[in-house]
Amino acid sequence: STSNSKPTLLFASVTSATNIDIFFSENLDQTTAQNTSNYSIDGGIGNPVSAVLDATNNALVHLTVSTLADFGTYDLTVSNLKDLTNLTMVTTTVSIYFNANPAQTPVVITEFMRDPSAVNDSEGEFLELYNLAGVPVNINGWILTDNAGETHTINNGSPLIILPNDFLILGLNGDVNSNGGISVDYVYSGFYLSNSGSGDQIILMNGSEIIDNVSFTTVSGFSNQTGKSNELIYFDGDNNVPENWQVSNSQLSSGDFASPKQKTHSVNVVVQVFGNDLILSWNAVSNATSYDVLEAGTETLVTNTANLTVTLVGEAINQSNKFYFVRAKQ
Image 1 (cartoon, rainbow, N blue to C red):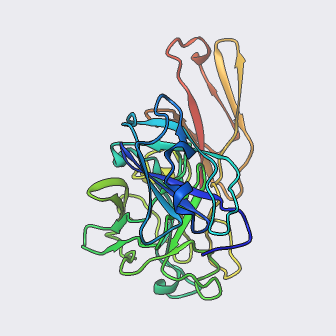
Image 2: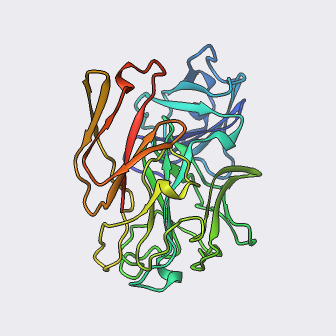
């Protein structure tokens, strides 16, 4: 397609250690698109070996480059590309990231609604993903599955991007007026969440590599309250530990409870030293019944209290450099 606007770079996707796909806002002039001097990558990579305009999608350029380092982050600069009306793009620099092991991509499952009350399950089930990485992640082509054989391959027809430190909502129904009030970014099918006490699994895969998975049962401690989603409290915690989840207390217009694209209630802790002791204090969290004080890393429970302060005797002189966090229980 063509427009009266200059072409813009939408997204760059690293597909292998030597290949990068760059997506633009409109069809490009072939001569400028295939001029390798119009592309440059820092970190000693330089200009690409080749630049090829896609034969079918003329808004897509395939770069072949020198080998990228695993877990390497680079700046890709693109300039002088023209569209079919001879308008020249503004020089643009974007960050790209290569991970040889997709299983280590830090995209995590942070919320799911398995039993909505306001609408049928087939209309209101949804999943929330969060990108902990410092670069965009393209999940187009990834797979949703479980241990029962239900599978959906994400097919957006174009890159489906989760921006750094941002959310993406996947749901069975994209109509906010009939799905319980959820703004869905991508509609999937053929994958459903069980309401039974024996639970279910949410497995997110890239090819044969498991990116993240959550196995939830009421027996293990996951809540299954009708009309309330399960939401992860600490995004960098183990999301297969039931204690790291809570039911949502954020009410939607439909009457159900969920917090799509919102971080759940975190507890900001103030630390004071009193002699040899540490005193931890925090503000109250709405509807919290008590608070777990845990040792970071091991997530070892130190104590549970209904108060908003706790004294850790002798910890001020402890030389083990322990860290603590507080989790609200509801």
